[in-house]
Amino acid sequence: MKNEINIGLLGFGVVGGGVAKILQDHQEDLCHKLGVPVKIKRVLVKDLTKKRDVALAPEIFTSELDDVLEDPSIDLIVEVIGGTREAKDAIERSLRAGKGVVTANKDVMAESGLELLKLADENKCDLFFEASVGGGIPLIRTLEDGLASDRISALTGIVNGTTNFILTKMKHENKSYEDALAEATELGFAEADPSADVDGIDAARKMVILASLAFSTDVNLDDVYVRGMKEIKDGDLELAERFGYTVKLAGSAKKDEEGIEVAVEPVLFPNSHPLASVNNEFNAVYVYGDAVGETMFYGPGAGSLPTATSVTGDIVAACRNLMLGVNGSRLHAPQHKKKVKDDSQKFARYFHRILVKDEVGVLTKLTAIYSAHGASLATVVQQPEENVAEADLIFITHQISRQQHLDIMNELKETPEVIGVQSHYRVEGEA
Ligand code: NDP
Ligand code: HSE
Picture 1 (tube, rainbow, N blue to C red):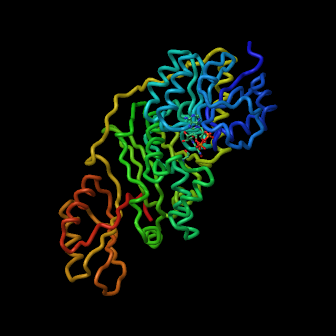
Picture 2: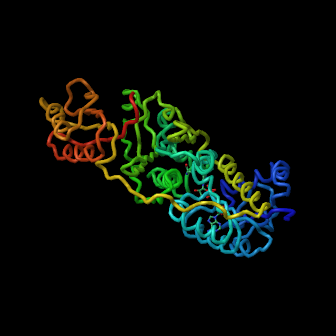
Picture 3: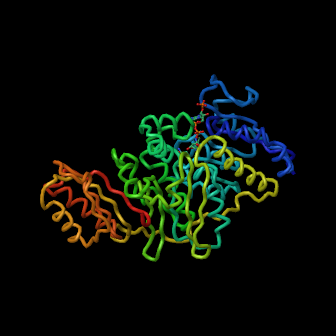
């Protein structure tokens, strides 16, 4: 029986610093829960000269991965360096050395999760990744344990804190995109390369992890339809508000008898929809189960201590398994063969903002294009209403397939009276 558990912490940035703080501040509680103390034995960083906030003995810091992995007294590795190649290599080496791993790394888990879970299993080790999705919200464990007996048919929600923070600051405080992104970076929400956040890739990776677990199939990044924040054009937030909607970068995953569909894109939510009022770095995810019905999970989606709470939760779970000697007993193999829907099988309502020459007959010509593609329209509005040389036409469709939507977009782009398709969004629910 162990009389203490030693941790090798890879990374001491936003999340790693938070993990060290929680392990220090909550040591007594953790010791009570586990029956033994949990200690950080070594810490891997890139720059040994950097000033660190948490009071840990300087000699436990190293810039050599081997110093951590080859220390036989270390039981568990916590990977919070981020990135892909080096992080994956460190996780693989830890598992091969018989050390369990806790990671917050969605890049690695989305790309190589199945392979690493298998490796963990083969080496009788745990591999936990609660913090990889939803920051401090316990979503992974909810899907794996709480809802394990249900059949999940859909997940929809806000899974990137940075973009939600930016959109909130732009809408409610009139901040520029650049200033809001700089603030999100300063607060430690953004990825090392924030294009992963704003281009929707971070959210797509999280949707890969959630959809794979929820549907028990091997979803990968290529299966996700991704549109990022740059699709949100000047004036769109105000325009959406005028129609009773809020723009959010949202993830969705659905499954029915025809297959699965997974997307990350800017979506218009009616202001009355709970996701419309999820602000700042907060995340929220709806999970629809056949038996449970509708459930919603809400909380801080990024940031030091919230994310570190999920990481330390995993540390507790791994330590309990270590104490009981039952590590590596997780079921990971997908149950279902993947079937991804094509665009003609995915249905939604769409909001189109089209800049046109304000000439007689334009509206008739454009509505005829929608009719020709079998799309019926719920709303048709011109902005501004008075006579000007150019105007935005706003069309909100009833349910159409993504294929119909794309065909209409293509035909509009070829229409001489159309100056440009300004923007287009999927619309959730009724305004
Ligand atoms: P940071 O950039 O703040 O910290 C990274 C840490 O890892 C630093 O201490 C850095 O060293 C160290 N490091 C990076 N590369 C190496 C390397 N090659 N060798 C040794 N040390 C290295 O990142 P975060 O803490 O924000 O993120 C860590 C992980 O957690 C990422 O996978 C991220 O996606 C994920 N995550 C982050 C969240 C957040 O809110 N920030 C939320 C959920 C998940 P040094 O200090 O010397 O520079
Ligand atoms: N950059 C990520 C976000 C961190 O903003 O959501 C949390 O995964």
